[in-house]
Length: 150
Image 1 (cartoon, rainbow, N blue to C red):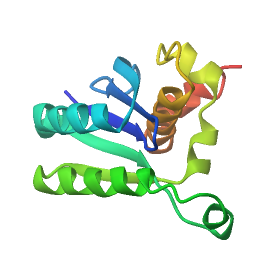
Image 2: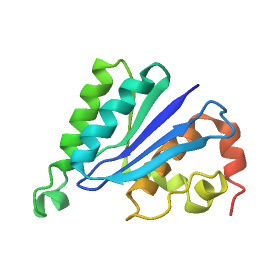
Image 3: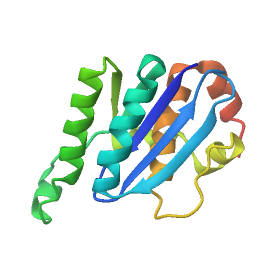
């Protein structure tokens, strides 16, 4: 078994757990949108439970001139730091992704593969797109199938 925990960090965080045991047929175990308190409950338990067969794909958050002009929003950075620590103490691989990396995985693609999250504000879908874009970039046979999805 091989699992990927996807994280789109923020005040409202998107989470997903994808079973990638079959590299050509990933399946969504669960997806959700959570607040910070729920993140503190769910993510450590998930990493602990799946740590022997897990890696984490997390969107990176960089403070730019544009973000600095907005109100301070430390949530993403705090959750990324906690995620780094949890991965470190559990010997789980962490893959950081830039926000633009998810653009290679479209909504039709993730729907086609049964990875769609219904409801919410789109944060869980963004976590799924990060996971799926990582899969596409690291497993070319999956990318060959996905590119034909309109």
